Image 1 (cartoon, chains in turn yellow, red):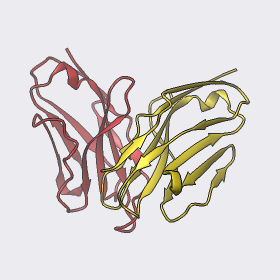
Image 2 (tube, rainbow over the protein chains, first blue to last red):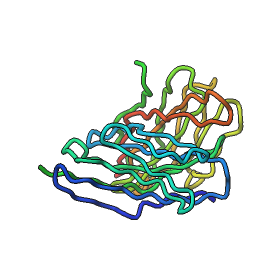
Image 3 (cartoon, rainbow over the protein chains, first blue to last red):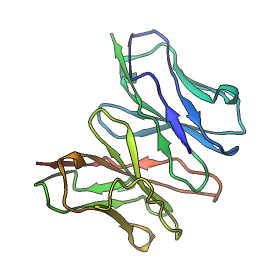
Image 4 (cartoon, rainbow over the protein chains, first blue to last red):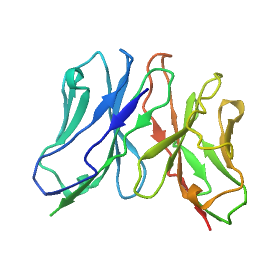
Length: 113
Length: 117
């Protein structure tokens, strides 16, 4: 069975701090896909990244970076120099081809000025 | 519009009534998902349609819940004999699966907020 665990329910930081959101997953398949989504206060979910299980290269996009480590079944998300606009709920998700995308319970990030 | 459209955006109903929630996916998207998000909770998977394959109904919480997708496009989620615990935001998402083996990015609608009194 697939499972995604986001152990951090809520995180509060001050602007310009770096913050890492943890994601640990469980799957028996060797081919799978990992995602991060952002849900701002407006409510609509926004896709951030997709990574397949064969690509362990870390990825950086502006202030966002992702660290995928199969050895620990983790796909952590780091925001560098956080900003108030980063305040949102962040979801990690997992699926295999042809199956439903399963989400973690989310981490609520609050960035204060 | 170009995005996923859901209606109604808000629905207030009395316990025991049936409700229907509608989702118009992005044109050409072969995969369609329904999720439920209760206050302060994560996204709970309900049902998944992929092309002409039999839907994955493994997330439906009870037999009061059902969904269909007509003509591979519009989907309707039906909740019969609603209960107060059904109160939540029901989110629909669609994706374009370019290859059978590669899940696509999900595009979400704004959701239908259901309140059962």
